[in-house]
Amino acid sequence: MVAPLPAQLTVLPEVLLVQPNTQCVADCQTTRQTSLAAADTNLLAAALGTCTPLTVDECAQAHATADACIVQYPYPDYSDLDERLAVYEQYSACRLASKVDSCQ
Image 1 (cartoon, rainbow, N blue to C red):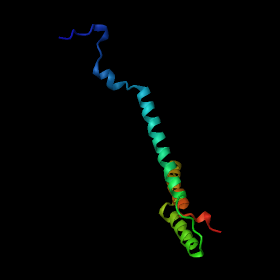
Image 2: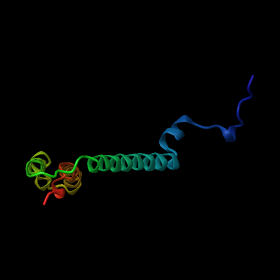
Image 3: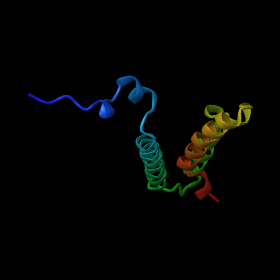
Image 4: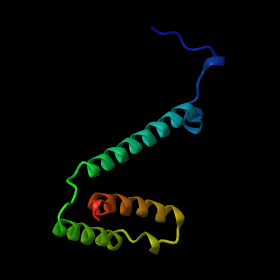
């Protein structure tokens, strides 16, 4: 049988719920941001690993794909800065994946 805790060591559950471990929360946020950054880096690396357009037809396709990016991700239409930046990141990844900047 386990002896009860002395009165000065008694922990109330409601105190634990109201006061989260700030280090744990900070560690969780750091882990989340690091994971997101790593995923973004891997996405961009994969986009760069695709074939570079060389012929006129391939470059025409790359231009068409890049032009479609702004239609799919119309970041200038967003007035909220956070939303605009989030959509711009998607537009930027789309344009990078099109490889249009590799064309002459």
